[in-house]
Length: 135
Image (cartoon, rainbow, N blue to C red; front, top):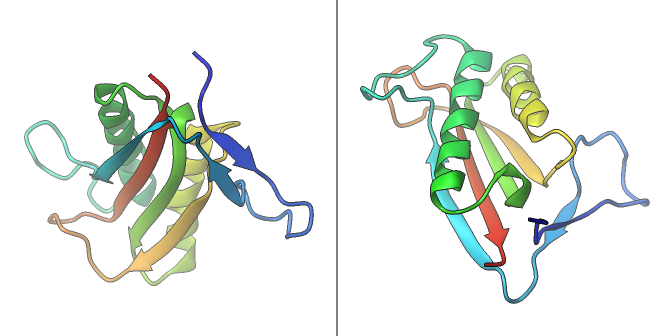
């Protein structure tokens, strides 16, 4: 099934960004607002303690599962916000590279943010997402 999401790239803004600058969904789309995808194991423990890339990968896995449960896929994502518990730009980039790779050609608009702390013990990464599907 084709995605309802249209990614908008700008010819007037910097080409350095690894994502589209905007996205749209048709008026008849069903919007899906995901809770922050956390790097949690089935038993509730935090995965990949101390590992930004490992936690980003687990958060992507969690996000994909939540999307599937809602009848969507990563190609239906309109926007993401990637939260990284660090004040070091390198840590943010490490997490971002994993998230960006997971999206492949579907480079949905995204915001990457360093935050002071996240909700679970030892948590370093969380991914918020909005998706749109036409049923």
